[in-house]
Image (cartoon, rainbow, N blue to C red; front, side, top):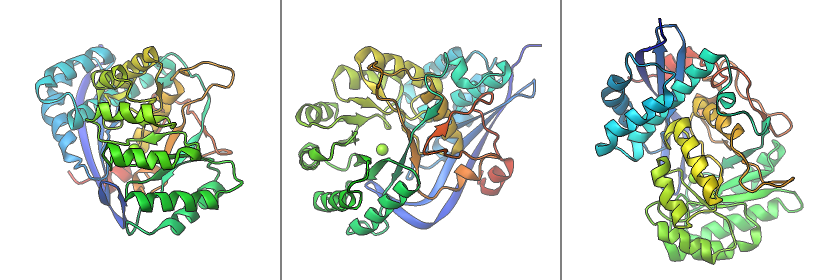
Length: 384
Ligand code: MG
């Protein structure tokens, strides 16, 4: 009997935060995730996750999976990953193409790759063509606000604690007003003086072109690795304008979807670094499409990840398989976003949580995603 999909279960999990925090788009009060479990007649189970940013209701992609995708998937071979990706995309085109519909497809796609890895007894990166690297450097994402403004000193202390925890790359959340942003950056730089730390900034598209340019101009001597989401994702010409006027690499793409969305960013010379989120860009298959397309435009790919441990595991497998864009002996390698904000669905969700070793993360070699999901954690936080 051939392997086939017999059930698709969605777990909407939520946990209230003890201390709410802000990024430029609002206050995050709880952590949420849309987790999917795809079951087969051979007992092989795959796990996937739809990206659910702090302000997004996880029920949207859950409803897409239940109502639109599950009927497409039942009785199909989970190994027909590319075929199923196109079926899911084509049959949701008229109401999908972006946002939570593509996140739902992404969750299923990750689960199908997990099944394929378990079926063929290989880690996903092996099925993708092998690992270009055995370890990945994680970078600390953090620097969220607890009040909103006037927190420069606390953020500088946070930078020092990330450094003490082994991070030499950090991404700072900005977008709380230019003056406050600059004050935070100066204070952080002073705190890290004489330490070899590379910074990135992320405004989550808080500004229009003129303010985004002023912020960037004032930070040109920070030698930032990148300036993330300087303007709204729709303003592709704005991206291109900033890229031409700033001596800072411009990054974006966590709110863009599929190769079709990234195509217009590349064609318009909008970004130096593409940041697809595996849980919303179209899954591992979607990322594969985007990576190849980016490569043809000479654009670096450095995935975004903010989800649970399942999204992190998918991101790690993809990062292992990304070729460097500009080859040299000391070529710049992709780094792993390693969010430091409070999140119970990371360590608690895995039987063996990820651990850093000398500031690096070893790429798991277990089959599929290389993780074991803790079912008790799913049960504890499940809301649907
Ligand atoms: Mg971001």
